[in-house]
Image 1 (tube, one colour):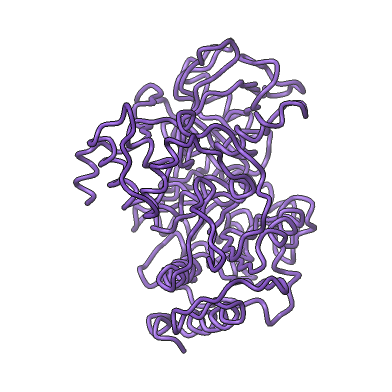
Image 2: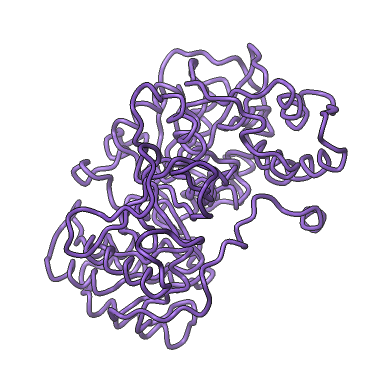
Length: 507
């Protein structure tokens, strides 16, 4: 057992040692901090599975730190340093912007899977800043950028390890220093993938082509991807390649949300008994709220989680109505969900640019207002490292009992959006919010249908995923009612980079 594993539980220590042995076979010796050049002889895939609170993220973070200390370079979708023959690299990935941002908030420099498929082409002048920040060059002198701006960029990078974020701290936008994108032509080295329960077979195959060594981290209790027959990619791995973490560490901190999530494993637990448990906990712990209505002010930043599309559409229209949103336009601050990119093949370069900037299917976005060109929108991509973009937009507002959505604002082609005040629990996987509202009447319907998925009642899998999206507070909404807003929609809280005073405080 390595020295690092002394801080781990038994199952974490065993997983750490097995992963360390796999890495040693690829030429990365964590015990001796020795690296040998990559030998691309075969693919190695292992998985670490466990329910919420079992310590998967802690193990991932410790492995990332150990690899960095051994001299392995961490690469992301925003910048890669100069290539060396003996260089060993690691990329930490997540399926969505929000999932990647959750890791970054915990000090792990993660990026999205899609972002790693493409590499940015930097303007040569600003490339010098990236080289300097990464420790591969001298401090540059850039026309138009003051010493104070470079100091802000350097201070930001020391904390966040994000080149676009550091550029933004210096007052630059992505369009200033990134001139385009190109598909990755050469494979990388080691890949860690968080939230791997969300991967489908095609994404898994793409990752195996890019990374000779792949380590998956996933929760087997979540919902499997659509059209995967209830299976997750790590279910197909041979037994020795899958390490399951059993101990739930976060329960030691008396977390009532996790207590509820893990109570769902009881095969005798009924929906009524589960609701009784929630109501009982809510009386003695304000981290669980037995809610009589949906709080509309929370919907602007964290969507209500539902099972049925009909519920989602009704809640979205109620949200817009209570804010007085006209049918012909969007209000600044309305939440949206990217539903994909509608561009012909001849505009492939523009598609890559939008996707690389975070406008991938499922991305959460806040509408900031119309762009300078007709049909364009200014948008804030939640969780993206360079969050503010302007894009040709097609916004679809679905209506109850109507097959075709209403389109209040549209370009001829571009990024397509649905409203984001409510989303299905399936689409919420990989995301977390401080406050999460779960629409319980939908789960009651699922319970009455007695549907089974992957050997478990569907309502329990839905409840587990929905509950574990809450970072601090769970609101279990029991009635089909909506509160009145306490304040108008806002955008002033969406800030690209911290101020110099905030940076000094963080340092």
